[in-house]
Each structure stands twice: as C-alpha cells, then as structure tokens.
Length: 593
Image (cartoon, rainbow, N blue to C red; front, side, top):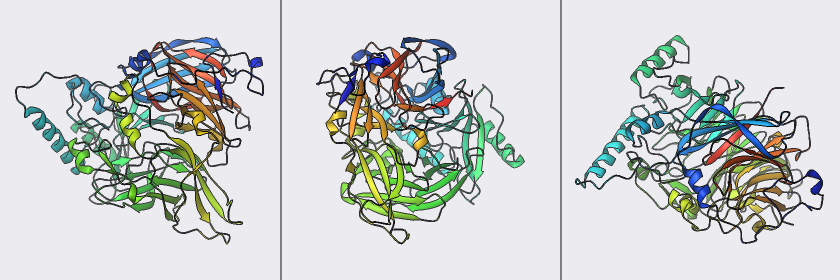
C-alpha cells in the first residue's frame, strides 16, 4: 500500500501501525515551483560564521547531535548542465538535547573557482560546459572567428597541460563528502585534480591533494598550476614531508601523495569504505588504458592497486559514476556509455553531453576481490545508472550450496536523463517529465556449490524489488540506507522519488524491500535533496533512526526536515538562515558525547 505523508509534522500519537497519520496528496502531483527553482540555481550566499537556525515545528530527537554536511553546486553562471556549477559546502549542526540548530555555507576554494571569479570565464571544462565560456551572455562580436579562436586556445592549453603533467582538468570538487579518521572531510569530483581535504567545522579547504607516482615517466595527477606551489611541493617531497606550506593569499596547502599508482586523470567521486576502515576506488588516465582499482589508506591517502581492468574500447572508455561494495568485493557496473574523447577535449557535444550510447555492446559487470585475488567480468543487458544502494553476499537462491552477490541500484533504460539534467530543461516550466528510473536488484553468481569462483557469465536483467513501481513515481535517485548495514542484507532503502508530473525529483521515499512497498514524503512545490539516514546510537533495529534531507520549499526558503526512519513521518523541521543551493551528496558526522 502506498502512503504519502504530508509535509507537516504530526504528533507521534497520530501515527498508528496502520498508517492512520497518512494524508492523501494530489494524485497528479505538483511541479517544483518557480521560486524553488530560482533559489536552487541562484548563486549561493556564503555564511562563513555559523548562524542560528530555527526549529519551526516539532522537536529534534534528544539523541540527535552532530552535523549534516552537504556538497553540491553553488554558482551556475554561464553553465549548461546540473553537474557544472562550482562547489559550495553546507553545514547544519543539530543539538537534539537543546532542540537547537545552526547553519553555515562556504564555497570551496579551488583553482577553477578562483579563476572564474577573477576572469568571468571557465578556465577548465566542467561536465557540460566548455572551457572559456563566459559567466554572462556576451554582446555579439564583430569578429565572428573570435569565439572559435578562444575555444581552440583553451582546448590546446588543456591538452598540453594534461600531457605535460600540469592540471588540465578542473579541480571543482563538487560531488561528494567522505568523513576520514582524522576528522577531516574528503571532497571529490571525477577529475583526479578535484580532491580536497576540508575542515568540517569551518568548511574551509585545508589541502589540495595532488597524487604523484613513483613509476618512471608517469605524469603527476592534478599538479598545481602555481610555480611557487610546485617548487614547494618538490622541496617537501624531497624532505619526505608530504605536505607543502600554504601559498600566499591563504589558499589551501598542497598535500602531495606519492605512491606506486600510475598517473590518474579521472576517478569516481564515490569512494567507498571497506570493512577494515580503508577506502576503495578506481582511477584512469586518458586517452586510453583502463580502470586501476585501488585500496587507499584513509590517513596517509596512499593507494595500492588491487586490479586492472582493460577498456573494451581503448579510444572510447566508458563513463562510470559510482560503484557498489560488499564485505569482500567491489562491483563495477560498466554501462555502454562511451566518452568521446575528441568532444571532451575540444568542448564539442555528442548525443549525451560528450558521450555516445552503444546499447548493442551490452553492460559489463566487474567483480573485484578486495584482497586483490582476482577479477571476474560478466555481461548483462544494456542499462544506465548513476547511483547504487547497498550490495551484499548471500547463499544462492537457485543453487544450493552456492553463493551470490546482490546489487541494488537505480536503473534507467538509457542515458536520456543526462539530457534531462541540462539547466535549460530543469528551469523549464513545466518542462518535460524526468526520465523513469527504478529500484532493481542485479544478482551475480559468486561461488559454486564446491566453493570455487564462478567464471564469466551472462547475467539476467536486474529484477524489480517493489510490487508497484508507480508508487514512487517510477523514479529513484540518491539511494541511501542505514550505514550499519553496509555490505549486509538489509530491508529499508531511502531515496528521492517523483510525484508526477515533474521534471525533477520532488519527493522522498522509503522502500520496504521485505514487503515490496514504498512510502512517500512530499512537500508540494518543493524540492528535497538526497536523504541521509542517521541511526540511533546503540540501536540494532535497522529502521531506528531518522532521515535528514535539505529541502527548498515552494516559497524558495530552505530547511532541513527530520523524518522518522521506516515511515517518513515528519518529526521536526529546521528553517535555515541561508538558501541552500542544489545539493548532490553529503554525510552526517556524530558529535562526540
């Protein structure tokens, strides 16, 4: 049964086990309002000093103490795509005992953003916007060849920089935040240069992480463009220091990490935690090669390669945004969405931004042992995905004594959603409906009844997990779950969803994978960001916790909603003193008791 909860908190007594607190919403749904769109895509206002926020309804759970930290884009001037804006970090600190909250917001101090503010043009290509694009529309030039010459110049500079080991890709780390044992945050995007360490209290970028290789002839990854910084980096590396003194102007320090990994141009922004507390990710160099899968020490940040996966087409590598991890394996789902390197480097366009869709090639599914003992590559029908929920290993349901991997993720038929996320489309009123995506499970054979690894095989298409996929508007993005269940069988998945018609995610959902049903939270005219599940400390009940999500309301104001895990009943709402722009991903850091 589908239950839609209103966007207003209700007394706990009003919510019975039969869902009596549910309030029916307009079955046709509502579009995100014009005011909300303007707020989400306006240039963000910094709030560097923490400012009080107001709990305007309900009450924070007394055990909820810590900070919701979010990454995303805060300046879209001149941009063409949702993934292009410059990184802006948001922090909402919650104290349930005092029923109080505070908020702050700050742009990430990157070379890309500094240059943009100084020149009014993009120094590097962002995802969908070529280098050299101005922040504002320019009057028509009397020299018609000038834009072409400027584009050619920027392209040449980028190619030469990449090939000579200088920073040829943007360092705009606008996608994820990962908490490290040091207490710092790791801010990432897909270029290897887009790797920063961030102070979780001030949101200031403290270090720009620059990878170097001990391999002879390897280029440095994302090397600083500042000659003084480069000289300092060399001196520090020679002294074994690893960290360079800050350059003038209070910019982030350069932390040079030298390891045995080959040169990296590209990484995934979704680094994963391993069961032993480490990190796992992969990188690649351009123009051709493959995936260098590595584990990473979360303190030194040094990487160790555990596998290499060669590209299917060395001249057109596939674009992979996220991965799934079990207790002992990494799963990389390689959709047949191929980067067109010419378009990428020259600022050209293809059917899907700078990429081509080759569905006839099918999908490759790579299963990599975290201990480095091997890789098995399976094939599956063509599909596209951005994000994964959970993955785990279990006894095979079809072969007694055997084992399998279950991977849950958001599945699209094709990458049309990439075009749906152009800023022109997202700002359109009402706009074209967002492409459908569905929560599905991919089952991968792992070991046979004798305990031997299963070799390459043809996998069935991912199977539905829910009885009625229209219950969540046939749209699932930013899937999340109780982090205590990472790599383990689980019951609840949280995500953004759609109350259609809409051209962007406009609801939150909890999906009960055991019962096969979904429940929605929807605020008409508003737009919620990624849900973040915070478990109650000390509890082993998977649903015992709260879901936090930043929301831009129909009036353009920003808040954070606190929803009950398992039901999405609204417990409290915190009105923020600053407008929060479009958020991608974040994390919750518990306050030490």
